[in-house]
Length: 206
Image (cartoon, rainbow, N blue to C red):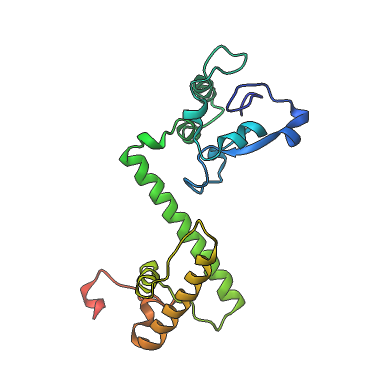
């Protein structure tokens, strides 16, 4: 799929050294988008991958000359696309520049992240319901946690340590218990699996 070449330098890959000297890199960093599909992965030398950090390949390598090919790295990517070795989605990832992203691309990333987050929530819920069938799983909005943090001066700093995860979990438990105990008639609105279904037919809403 890469014609035996490093995706970021164009250097020939020694198949006997792949496991030792090469990494599978996420074209668009995981910090930018959680995409572990083949469209977001390429094979590159370990030092190149380590130096890439949270950068994107277009800005870091695109204008460099591809080793032994007499063309730039981004021209090499286009050649792969022309030969059908990579699809349009992968080509777009290789050529994406976050600083010049358009509204359509931004909207696409947001939709993808929301879908993946929703899938993760559904999976976690399914596991919890299977493990604890008598337990009610309550949906708590992040804004509720945010309100309690502000109300009780609970500061959040991701740089200092990971304690904010524990605090968020504790606040979520408090909010969930409060909702469940204080608003029994509204449980279909926030208890997972009991969500109220609305009909577009006005007669069925009564």
